[in-house]
Structure formats: C-alpha cells, structure tokens
Image 1 (cartoon, rainbow, N blue to C red):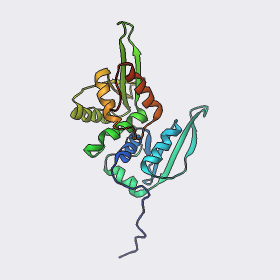
Image 2 (image 1 turned 60 degrees about the horizontal axis):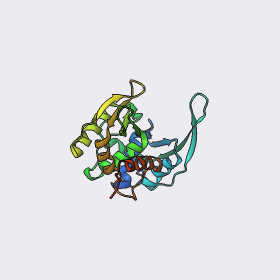
Image 3 (image 1 turned 135 degrees about the horizontal axis):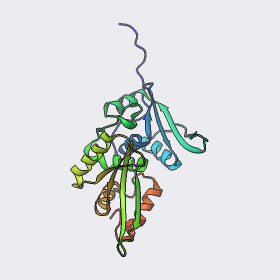
Image 4 (image 1 turned 180 degrees about the vertical axis):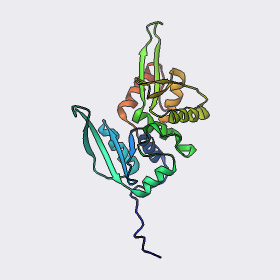
Length: 224
C-alpha cells in the first residue's frame, strides 16, 4: 500500500454541548465554509460576537479585521482557520460551502436545538418592540429569524412548531431573496424563554438586554 501521509488533525473538539450548539447557530447565520474543503470563516460587525464564537468552540485563533462595501467603510471582525476534520463534520450535518441560499436542515441533537436557535438569532435574527398607536397602551414585540434560504427558514419553522406548537409566519425581507420568520408577542415570549435557558448561556449581550427591557415592560422575565 502506498503512503497516504499523516491523517489530518482537528483543533475543534467535536462534542455537542450548549456552547457547541450555539456556535453551530452562529455558523449557520454568519459563517461560511470556503470552497477549498479546509477553511471555516466567521465574520461579524460585533467584536463580542466574534469572541463568543471563539469561546463557544474553545479555540484561540487570532481575531482579525476586514473591510467591506464599495467605500470599505464597513468593518467586520473575522475568525478564519483551517480544520479539515471539523469542515468535513460540518458537511455531514448539513452545512454547505457558500451556503447562504443552499443551507437546509442542520442535524442537531434534540436537547440542543434552542442553543442552536439562540446562535442563529444572534447571527441573523432581530428583535423589535413598539407601542401600537391604534390601541392605548398596546406594547408589541417580534422575534425574527432571517435567511436567504427558504429551505432553512421552513426547517426552523417546523422545528420550532414541533417543540412549542406555535406557527409564526414567513415574509420577505427588504429584498425578495431574503426570508423572515416572525413571531409576535405571546409566541415570541415562548421562544425567547426557551432560547435563553440560563444566565450563563453565551449570547450577544446587547440583544439580550434589548429583549429583557421589552419583557420587563409587560411584567415578564427571561429566566426564573
């Protein structure tokens, strides 16, 4: 037999946990698998988000920066590293290179779905609240998940329904190529309490604070 060379070694410990599932959610939203079969790339405008990604995977790769846009005014934080075993594992659970429009179902252990969802929310999701002028003291809020892949949005919707029995509704974003999965007040509260499953869970702090402020106005808390 010929010499096939040494087996590739991975630096990411592939073991499902609350943190690992959260990192998978971040990758599904703000991450990218390069076309070379080796590199994993994560970018975010939030430094904390990039640091959370490294923390969740327990990796120490350098945090870089890159500029984007026609004027290069938009600054992003970048985590990029080579890990063939981790790359191949990501492919095996549903990730795809240049996945924005092709990603579908991600194979996640049942007990870690909402950790994954929290990562997806921190990556591409949004939360907004407002007083509806049509009714006196009517405070509304929405939790929204975003993807360029209809398959992925449909999968998220189905998985959330299986666990919480809430439907949500799908609309287009600012462009027809982006899909938004929206949950209004009561259903939104159920999702948020399931995603933020403890005070120690890794999350983007500014989003959590925004959510906590809105829930406080209706006499609710994220955790008990």
